[in-house]
Length: 123
Picture 1 (cartoon, helix red, strand yellow):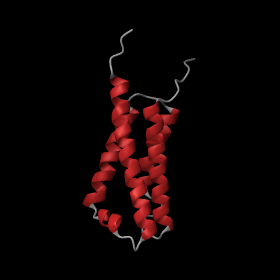
Picture 2 (cartoon, rainbow, N blue to C red; picture 1 turned 90 degrees about the horizontal axis):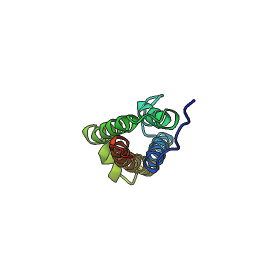
Picture 3 (cartoon, rainbow, N blue to C red; picture 1 turned 30 degrees about the vertical axis):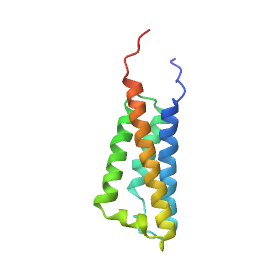
Picture 4 (cartoon, rainbow, N blue to C red; picture 1 turned 90 degrees about the vertical axis):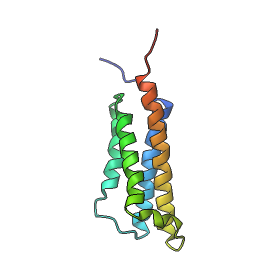
């Protein structure tokens, strides 16, 4: 049976970023920002993190890149970016900052991981 290799540093950073982003969403929900009962953003964040930890396929970081771009573009196209600069909604503002900065970090780490995963290895 094949042994699973340990997660690379980039993959660990991806998982940490995605989980931290989910915590940012939880902070927003607790602060009263309207979210659906089951926020789809949690699936967008946590499923790729789980796949990275459990599967270790080299294509998983590509999913993280797509999810990250989707969430970053959604922040601006939905108008939610205005909440980034509304300190009167402190919890929602801080939660959104945590979420989006973590998503950006995870996306850049996923780019690095993808490059590492698809680099031609010479022996």
